[in-house]
Length: 639
Image 1 (cartoon, rainbow, N blue to C red):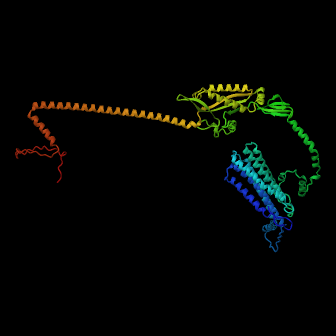
Image 2: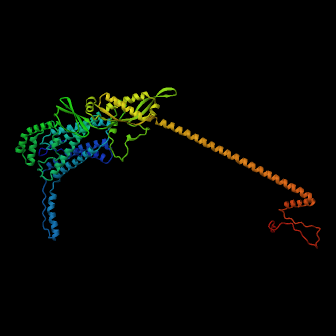
Image 3: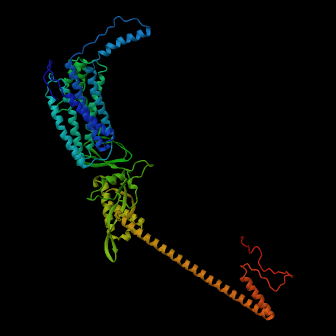
């Protein structure tokens, strides 16, 4: 905020405040739009962007409203415009009514002081409404915690950003009311960014350090920014119902009583009384009711404090709760569910103990020896939609790492030599604090963390168990016998330590080689499957070859037998024909030979056109013997 020469009223006009306010609004809109339009991940960067946008919206609202109000004061009261209609001709009744209404509304609209009355209110209310929406959006965003690097940079950046805001607030606080009338309200308003930057930076630092109370600081910053924004909106809305002060004494509507409480001094009630007396005409100093309350406040507060202290001697325990009652440092009784009266604190103290609550924990440790707490929470909280997707812990395939499995070294023998192998076990213990009073006392005074005690005892027992057996015994053991013996031994160990813990069940989900060996194991399985496939294929090929050879042999043998039979039959036929020819020759002699000669000649000349004429036949006899075949066998060519 810069100042130039004083005007006639002695006020230094903040000529650059509107530029700074416009810059604040631009940055706020960029941060707000980056998340609202989906350009930024929702969490955790989106939540931070919304919070920073709300802070910049408040700063821009204060600066713009102060700049517009200062410009209106420098201008002074606006001129009043008077409109008079002269020489108007008479019209019909409906049109004359409309003209009369227009004549009445025109001066009202022309005399509205937009610059002095409404622009400051709009400049203060609209960014404040956006700030409220940004705070609401940031409050409803839920997501995983950011990385340590993100928290480190955010904490350093926000704490550094609080320094320029502090310098600007101190400069405004040093301005006098006569030179800059809106400086006190702006100084009060800019305490909110300082507090918000410090609170958000502290929250990021606590999250980086692993302190679980970091959401309290973040919510505190959101609540302060939201309350101040809501107060500015209510102030702007009140101007619709109360008359505005004169323009010469008017101040920015972007002011906040809540922001004025952010100071290291006690609130100035006299100044508040003077403000209410000037604005509303109410003098609280002369109110007999307030005087009575002031006189009676101390006794009433003392009685209320005594009553509240006595209420610490009344305790109501739920159905799954009980408590060990200590009077003057000694245990007196174990309170069961119900309403109990006892000595108030610090004379009587109750130490709560679970009553019938059954818990299930996996026996798994982190790499550094500490318990993986986030994995334990996953197993203890299993809510969700029963029809929805199963949680990752429900995956029982051993080909992937699971958070509930622990790895142990197990002895093995390979190729006649001793060796070690790794086995993963998914084991869970179901336990509760015993229902007797002695168990409750033992759980309170002998065990600081029952879960840690059960996990440590079960872990030592598992390590000793796997050290005694080989990998073949572990993978091929009787699961029921192992569970029964393990549960009895664990219960005996906890009873010997007088922990008051009752082991209800031991659940073994799986015992298998580590997931890193899954690929190798699958390769071995694939090789065995391929070997079986090759053997089966070779056997099938051998059977095919044998059958084909048998078929070929059978065919060859059958063909040889058939050919032999045909040859024998042909020989027999030839023998019979030869015998017949000999017999016919013996009987016929030359005629048989001549007939046979003609038969063979007929066969030889069967395909030739032949005409035989005996020259010894006379012309007179004219007898002709035609030995030619019929017309179907020979057709002469046409010439």
